[in-house]
Length: 483
Length: 102
Image (cartoon, rainbow over all chains, first blue to last red; front, side, top):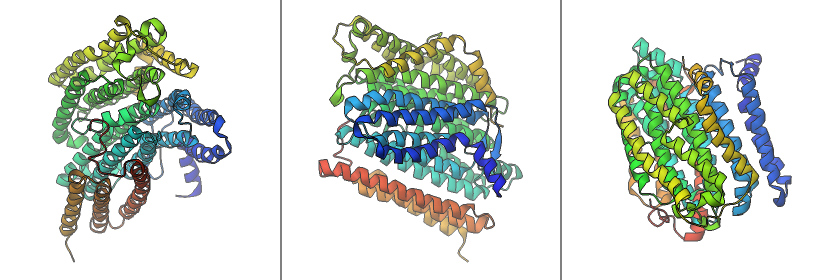
């Protein structure tokens, strides 16, 4: 690779380069920011991501295959990059006051956040299994630390330990799968794998085994049943601002990897993999929604809700092997991820507003009477719960609608029925939160932080407004189809 | 020359030992050792496949180097977490770290 090639390659991934360099610089700059003024670090981190976001938005049509085919910039990666950077910026807004209140103000928090975001952005453009592995680790390792950043709080340390053990275990499975795929095809590039399969030179047994291990390992990352057991504990123990970001960013990045690898490289294996995906999706939706009913702690409830949502996103992938449906698969999965991100941020910002020190204010009872003292918070939480349930005209309804439509196009009405029934079950625990807020008496305590309120109300308004005018958004997601 | 399948069987055995350590042992350090065994099994696989399937392509070897570089970073973070937990609880046994429902 000569010099002009290298600069063209770097130019193609400019948003990623900006975030990584900014993170390294911020690590140094933070040393000179005194303990009382850590808000400045937050501001700088947000500015870095905003700059990167502007660059991405300015060239949304960019398509390029660079770094000798290891990196592909296309509609899919641009869509996800915007999603990741957006969630990073919202995460900073949610963290700023929360960290001050909990006594966690540390400059490295924002630096680690930037590194995690860069890992997610790398995942979006990765078109070689080596890069997928690197991106997975770049996004996971800072997240392990972030989960435990509230040390010496015992639950945060415990959450960090559990996340690390299960996370690195799943990474081990992912790389073993990659090694098997490499052995079967002699290459790690996704395009090369397709060529090897069409040429008939691939060892199909090894390839299927490798693909299955990739699915298991990435299934841990996005919390599919039966690989979900870490999720409730980690989500409950980690600081809420980290959990909010983890629930959205890490899940979206995991699905980015699954979508790109399976749709681009493994359509030939769909005979073997589609039944597996069917069962995984059904189990995830059923278990996530049913167990959520028993939860009294709001963070655990949202954790099970995030598991259930992983099932709905996986639905879009079930018919991925049918070439005429694959484009809709990608579009509906991306749209669902976007809807999920808005809904989750709305819900989590209300949770953060109500959380008190020492982990108080997180039980359902603490939400009783919220509508009287904090009508705006109660209203935004209601919008989030309705969107999670899938009530029109919210974005959550459209997300489910497109996913189910893709599923019917692919010819899986049975699974669609399971999806609708579990959605009905989920209405029970989502609406129970609304009942507590509006119909029970109580003295809830919430803080009034402008950034948190802006984040909560803005994403709630987006949920409704974008839900009504969703056409351009879905058109954008449809352009993202993988070639 | 030793046939490829021997390397694969060896790597699979190593991976299974690591898997067993992760699933059956309770001490976090032993679990970490199990994970490292799994990653080493991957490296053996990668290098063996590189040598036997596609020796012209350097990717297999490069990938093996990346795997242990990343594994080292992981261990650094892991030990930091373990030490911080050990300071307060005097134990890193996964059984005793059960503040939340597992």
